[in-house]
Image (cartoon, rainbow, N blue to C red; front, side):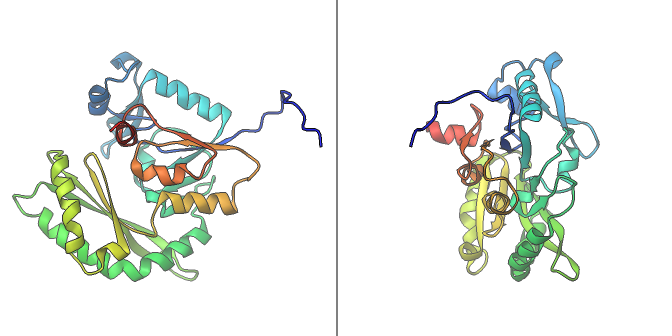
Length: 272
């Protein structure tokens, strides 16, 4: 058999670009300063997200905006983010393909509709854990109301259909430190397995900077991306992705190529 040499082809097939968002494509001003990002002078910044009061919150540098524009024009851009359905609405960037949200618990189609098969699968996985998630929620909600507490607790809840009815289920629990004390969050993470029985059997903990998440093992970007690759994406098309977090690495490793920004948790871990 003779194997041909490469010939260029004007018929371009767009690759899939599966992209994390926060701290990969944009970041807050505080992190821009901490990372000393180039082309991030105030007059060059592009607003990427707003807060709950619709005020600018996260920004793209000129280079990041150029990169994002290239992604939009040259790839099928698929969002893979920890942001939930409410939080993604505060991202002021155009997306027109699949969206993997809430650490992988939610998949939206290009039309913005919930992927029903994934919804039912997640319902089956999350429903048995509701008692334990509610128990943890009560513990942290009570603690965060303490005058001396610096913890900011947020349960992430969404509606899931089991094939016949919609039911609101807690997906995961998020904790931040009001003073951005990363060491305090790391110590809390180490203590979590002692709070309820069989914690490690049902949950894992992800800590990145001032974000601590308590997640069921069933909730992971990797699982959702694997489902898309197996059932909805064209296996003949190449794929690549970028992410900044250690939690991104499992989904990135499913792709043909992957990378990271030259800052953030994944980069720091590689260099340590």
